Amino acid sequence: MADAEKKEVSYKEERIRKITNFYYSRPEIQKAIFEFSKNRETVPRYFEGFGRRPDSLQYPGDILELVKKGATSLHCSQELWADPLKITTDMSESQINNLRAGWNLLIDIDSKYIDYSKIMAEIIISFLKFNGVRNLGLKFSGSKGFHIIIPWKSFPKQVNEQETKNMFPEWPRIITRYIINKTKDQLIEKISALERPNKYVKDYQAPKEVMPDLVLVSPRHLFRAPYSLHEKTALVSVVINESDLENFQLKDADPLKLSKENIKNFLPDSKEGEASELLMQALDWYRESNTGQEKQEKTNTEYKIIKLSNLSDANFPPCIKNILSGIPDGKKRALFVLINLFRSVGMDKDELEKRIYEWNKKNKIPLKEGYIKSQLLWSYRKKPIMPPNCKEFYQGIGVCVPDDFCKLIKNPVNYTIRKNFQANKIGSFSKGAEDKNKK
Image (cartoon, rainbow, N blue to C red):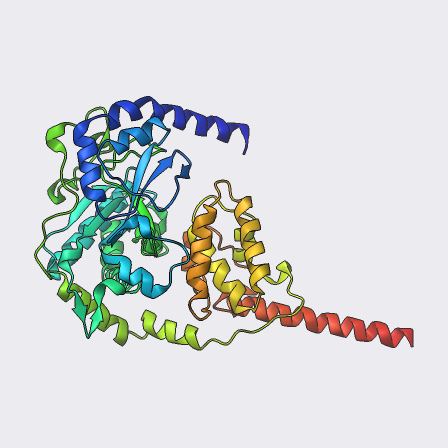
């Protein structure tokens, strides 16, 4: 890390540590975080790194004790558990389902520009209301985005003889993709109408800058607890009313100005099953859409591993090379890509894991080894699938720099296979010519 970067990190850490003890010592803050954390994995973050997992809060006072040990924020799971402390990384899918009591739908709206995030939040809330979801929670992420939550109580507990609690993360992913599909055009229209629209609008890229983050819909993923501080901004992940969204300003999340009277419950008291229509509409869209994930998963399931010989890093597409050199953001999405690419080209398990852990060391802030282990175990339980297709997914983590060969393919696996084939063909030709000359 360069000296300037170290200085910036040091400044941010010093700034947030000046207020953590004072802020988290407030009983109303402890109560708000503790009440939301019930039946959830709740893990402290120590500025740049997370604490051990699994973990949970037993008493409101646990929060201040963690802060005294250096914690700067608390992060919770979307999933609700009968006992979070019983979770282990080697549990089978059936064991996980038995322990899981339910899940919330958490939509993470994250953008480079808070004005874009506001517009997207307004559009999504309006869409949810139209689909019968009247009670939802809204909070500032602490940086430049917003979190929208729909409680577990809002969802039907069974659909077509399938237990809804066992359909995590599949059904939350489907709902989120459905929302993206149905709101994208309206997002572009509203952003384009701004007096000084950003350059991304011109080439129809607005959704990539503000669309909900699907990474949050993954097993045991954590998100910032309501009223927790944000390490980089020292702002509060404050709960707000829908009516206050348009006029929300960053100063409204100042921890030193947050009054006791303004503390609200992030999880609303919803009506039983009020999100049933939303779920059913999303599942119908998923089945019927030509671009629905069901079709993609079927294709992925039927994909036959191609064992590549003499595989060289030179045969990977530019996006994969960029990932393998280490990246500052989007590491969890990148891990998903690498695992599925390596499995799809027949890389041995030992070599795959070696490559993954070597890559992680190159990241400025490496992923926790426990997280990598859990993702590997989760992947091994299922048949290999291809990584996401090109462009949007890789643009989202800033690694898409296409070369001339990229325009001929749609997926990193296709690129790698064709490049590997060409390299081996050229190598065989060269060897044959060399042998002929020797004769």
